[in-house]
Image 1 (cartoon, one colour):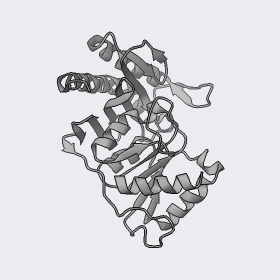
Image 2 (cartoon, helix red, strand yellow; image 1 turned 90 degrees about the vertical axis):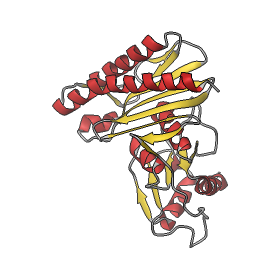
Image 3 (cartoon, one colour; image 1 turned 180 degrees about the vertical axis):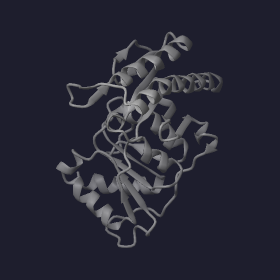
Length: 270
């Protein structure tokens, strides 16, 4: 585990980098000043995405010239123990369509372990951040995930009327037996929502919802949020329980007991 003093320096740099990205993204968003290009994977990209990633890297490289980078727009650059993971605009579709559910995601990985996360949703008005072992914060408020009763699939009393589950992308989950598990969770929950992107992880970290389920994403979407949720007391894995890594493509996040029960339900579905 790196020294606390180094992580504090890295956090300072990440927050400065988020400010640099916001200086690019905010004006373009408010003026609707961008052209949209469709990438090979059929997702949109704008000048703001590319300019914001470049702005983030300028700040981080000035502080840590020997670190490696993995960005949404420019891919992998460099090798080494330290890897910055950057999604300059996570939620580009929201950015393009003019609603503020997008964010800048900056995380730091040390030898495969996520140790720092900054999730900046400036147009929505929220910035969350966390250091491994140092807690998670929304502005100056320390975050804590909720602790609902354990989820007991098949038990009619599993969820109370206040239990909330939020889902993101679900295309691959909808194509197999896990869809029936999700349907059972929906029937037994108090509320089902689809906040998506950064927002449901922020809500989870501060105890406003109880479980997040996604089956189609990449590590750059969630790396910073993994650190934030864990430091708020939650558990964050892939849907099959695998630890989060560079190849992660799904997410199951919630307080420990609820995560454990939901994981068992999905595992039973194969």
